[in-house]
Every structure is written in structure tokens, then in C-alpha cells.
Length: 139
Image 1: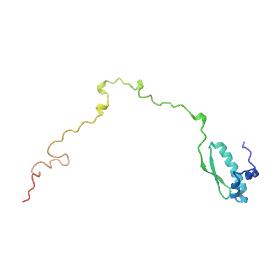
Image 2: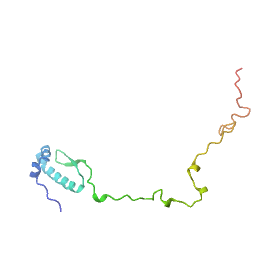
Image 3: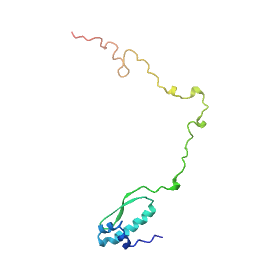
Image 4: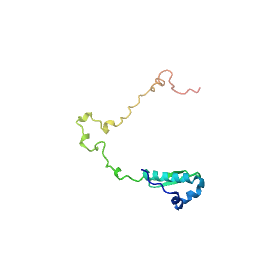
């Protein structure tokens, strides 16, 4: 069911893992040994290409950095269009031309010329009638 555990003597003599055993107190080597074997089992099934491991003084090993996952060769699928292309005849229409909305019908119309006199609401009538300012009287 599980792959066999790597013996502690083999891990301690490996130059890649000897610094970990120097970092951990000898009373906690069994925790380090157990943690390394669990990380190896996880690494074999995780699918990551590179993993940077870190450890505590008590022997717990955890992944400090995870690299990219290995690409799955069966993951490539060709791109399928959700809708037909715009030049496909599916998008053509039988609507008569006067009823079509084109760029010319969407073009904004110029504003009509402003009427002389009076502003619009709420300023309507302010420049008309008896109250309108005609000229400045400085006398």
C-alpha cells in the first residue's frame, strides 16, 4: 500500500539531508525521520517539479516553496469555438435594409440650435420681461 520507509541511517548519511539532522536536536530525530518520509510520500503524488523544504528545531518538515506542477500530457485539448465566427453565414439576416441598425443610424445627431431668449428650466424667463437686465445704471 505505502512505499517502504527510508531508514534513518540512510537519511542521516545522505549529503542532502545531513544538514537537517544537524539542525534538529537528536531527541527529535524520530520526528524528522517521520516528517521526511511523509514529505517524500506527498511529493511522489503531488506532481510538483521542485519543492523547497524547511524544518523546525523539533523536526517538523514542511514545504516552504512549491514550484510549478509537471504538465499533464493528456491535458491538451484543441480549442473549440463557442459561437461561430463573425464571417460565418449563420450571422446573416433577412431583415429589410430600412430596419437594420447600422453605424450610420447610430451616429449622434448634432444638437438643435439654441433658442434665443430665456434659458431652460429652472432658469426659464430670467432674461425676458421687466426684470431683465438691460444695461448697467451707475448713476
